[in-house]
Image 1 (cartoon, rainbow, N blue to C red):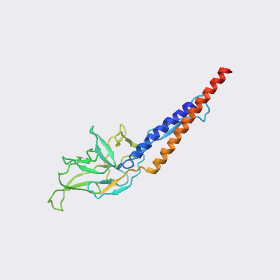
Image 2: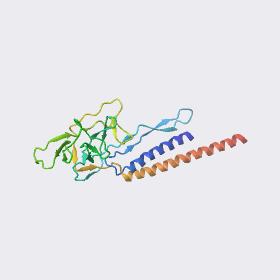
Image 3: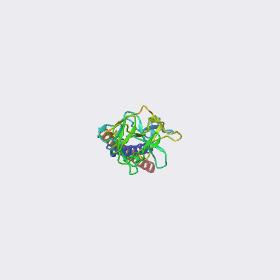
Length: 244
């Protein structure tokens, strides 16, 4: 009884931490809610067959789309439906994000607000300093300098938009998603499109997260009471053995 209750309390604490992290990111653009899964593991031994430990499985994410907010800012983009923007990681690899509030660095490189370089289909994306940037639905980026004609604007690059299977993605500690170990980087998908002047918000439902926090707190309290009951039963049994 003690170990069964202990495993339940441990997993309730882990779930509470996950829900708290979701609550903290309820206003983070493009955030994907973390989902923890649990499974029952039957107790091996002479105990009743109804007893089971709680074990955590690989945490996943809620990939549903968050609410879209129109900003009118040319460098704000939101992926329509399924799909991801690609950014470069410090080790030179690729990672995937839905955060689309972009900016132009001092050297003209297109970056996320977290200062991560945005990857294009041909590599890094660089725009001329001081130019007016526009991003088309297919990810094509055009830049028009001051005094340039409105027609014949040159395309400086194209966002690499990907749509790998959700089962192939894992969330990193930095909040970015990557392909599972052993899988190659995702290929560009022409079917993925973006909306310009729009930012996608977090897909965390604040009300549901709050209800989940309350439920997990009550579950933890129930498991702790079970542990106290197991301790009381053990003490009573010791007394009976001592004076029997």
